[in-house]
Length: 379
Ligand code: HEM
Image 1 (cartoon, rainbow, N blue to C red):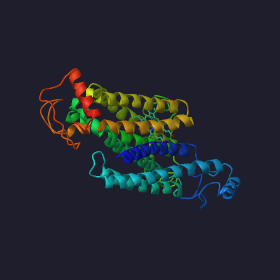
Image 2 (tube, rainbow, N blue to C red):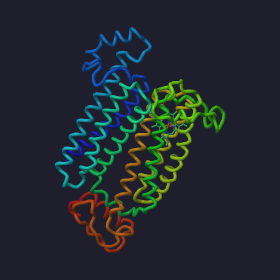
Image 3 (cartoon, rainbow, N blue to C red):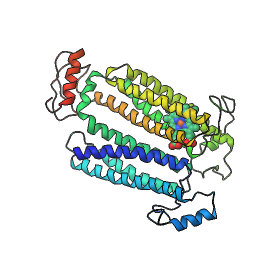
Image 4 (tube, protein in one colour):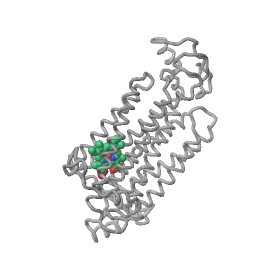
């Protein structure tokens, strides 16, 4: 499992870099730095295509092509291609070692499909000239990759430690709430992606109101027409300020709904011993993300803050996968009630775990959990 685990961790870190760097490329207006795909003017690197790039830049100095922009775009592609190869290696290893605890070949295979589709979305982002629907889907695909890899990493690294969840005994409503929180987060991220890819960040520059109103004039029909060109309505007219306002305002309302829900969820998780850390992490990540969103509005979207808001979304995805993983582990434990009740075996490990017949408390419980975590083979 050693190589597999290291590759999963590498892929997870690389995905975070690719997602955040991808946002940087977009927000730095370098998304069309190389107007073809997969190469740059058919070449392997901007250095090889320097003559074409210089000619395009000279023809349109304020256009999308320049040498620095081409490098940004290509570095994103190199990183993404490397990630694709690592993910294929992970899938091969996961399949070969499918009988071993901690490997999840099904998830690894899905990941390969997602990363191939991501490559296509990356291509269409360029060739279809930054259509908002494609660029938003590309962002969501990147975060899906991150979510699946987070799950794989938790499976690979946390398997022996899951017994710690015996202390949690999560209720079905809490698990349901965690799943609903994840869905709301995905919706809020999609709205954020839609705001960013339609360049609606500065449609409202005041906070908490928008244009001095809590019911600003907005055109929701054109705002949420999914298939259209960047900056245009489906009929080919310029997208109005009212439509951009609708996009921006909906993302803020979404933050109220999703943020409010995650706040309550985080507080509930914090109150339970088995999920306290996850609850704290959720509340901290949420506070940072909301703070960054507000700062972006008030400071007129400085590039580092805009990129950090993307990273904050990625962090929230990771934390919510952790939350759901923690609670899901408890569900499949084969006994009812709280820690130490009854005898049983843990289905998540290959090794039956004899459990004491009476509830453990305090130091006894801590010692038992520590023993299980540190030496699951013997347990
Ligand atoms: C749970 C809370 C939130 C989440 C998960 C979230 C998520 C996102 C995401 C994923 C993006 C797209 C980032 C990118 O790749 O460029 C985005 C954009 C944006 N968000 Fe949020 N957001 C949240 C809260 C807020 C709040 C409270 C505000 C302001 C009051 C806000 C303002 C914005 C703005 C202005 C953009 C556009 C930035 C750009 O053009 O790059 N967000 N958000």
